[in-house]
Image (tube, rainbow, N blue to C red; front, top):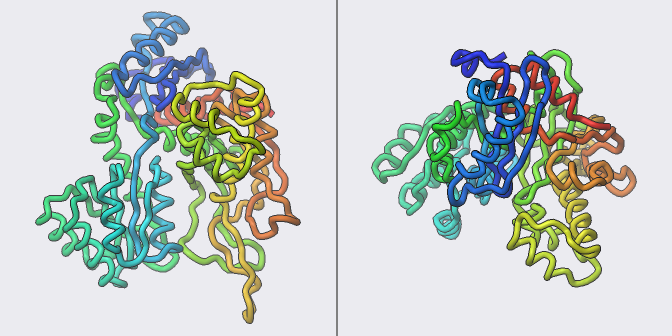
Length: 461
């Protein structure tokens, strides 16, 4: 059980809110009976006045638990408004510092717009200056290792017109020089311990913590949520972080005891498709793992595979539908709340959802490649998920479509056609029927056991 919020008051109820780009969602939880009493969602108003949709959520909660209980209830929130934290990551090696940096950023709830490896080119700096990033993460070099390239990159960034918070998580030997460069250039920056301090060791927690702190202190206001902070106890975390926390709790159980074991969770949304995996990091049989070590809980975000905001890029990635459906895509790209109204639109919607699941799962999972002239049969890149036997679906297109479990089959690999992809070939499929993963992740901040029981009750075979 968490204590930070509990120390303020001891209520039986919690009102859990998520400010999304498309909808603002609410779940009212009974902490004594470990159940969700009511859920509701309303069109988001974060672009104008976030308190409008929040008031509608609060009215639904007040009606469900009563006026007095509502006033005394915990009120906490997550946010993914405007598509989540937008970040860029720089590093030296794509399979080491870049991979570690991306994993930490994803774990903290980010959407990565650009990664740069090796020595930064002028064109890289120009693109970083133009992109709407909110945080820049600099990685590279083991402690007491490579310093030349890291310093050269920091010098270019210091001389650029990039004016967002910069997090340096590279070789500790150059920290003083980096601090001097960024201070003299007037940048806002944070120096944290190296994310890759030595061979085979990943230290991502300091990076994730500073990203979360930046989200709470700066990004919330930038997304128009400052107007509602006085109406709740706390805006705790980015929504993707809340969902990842719920996945971890479901996998390991309260206090790390019990749980469902290794799992993959698929969250298909309007802006992105997110894949969360909870599985022991290790090498596929007969393979040598290359690159940064994976963590038990990992998340990837595919910003080009959303069902509405990025439906145009999703269609291109999925391939030909069989006929021209650009009018459908244009309408969905402009109206993120739009639902299928014709048989053709329903077919396109299903086609996109199927491909969002299939493609994002393959981007998330690791793969193996055969070697030549070596005693090692394969080299492995990324995470081995072949042993996972539970796949969970959340997000509107999976929960409300009526064919969510069929879509989840897209996670599975065909052993004959895809022998090198490290995804499971068989699994059981569960749906987050009450659509409360975000709520359980928030509730974990108050009561792990209640959050876990509520998660179990939401899952349907």
